[in-house]
Length: 208
Image 1 (cartoon, rainbow, N blue to C red):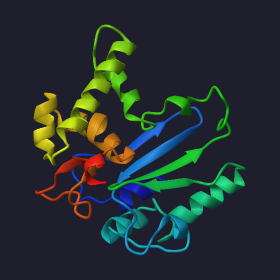
Image 2 (cartoon, rainbow, N blue to C red):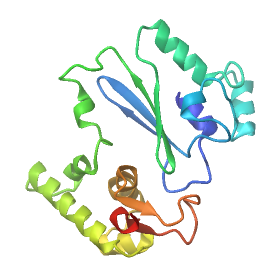
Image 3 (cartoon, helix red, strand yellow):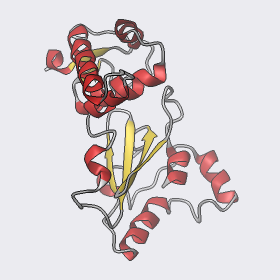
């Protein structure tokens, strides 16, 4: 799955990378770019499309893939042979998420109850406040609500970062922009061109 992400991610999308998030009961590979060509979640096993054919050819040459177009179907087969749930795919405006669940899936004490992309609030625990988790949570929540109000009129990424007092583009993307886009609280003004230099972000309640 990781090799597949490296082979097929959309390298035109900057500001983020392939991310691997591991938990007791599953792991998720997050890859920049939605499914390419005619490939959709409901036909992902049958249809194959190479976004980066030269990378795929190189991986094949070094035996990192067995044959062209076999990656996803092989994952399904391996999971079935191990008696585990089928792979789970979902996508947002500009990210593809692929999740594999293990034998711990569904147990009440499993780590999925606190995964980092279940919501923006969990990310607030890392805000760096000395008062502990509760204060970090409240501070993050206040920033998010303030951001939503600020974006009632479309704003650029830099305008939002300046408003929040952030200088790290990566921190802004991971803690604020990506989770708010995924949750639908923010929308792109040019959704079909995520990397457009004219891209702005607006609160979803304004667009509806």
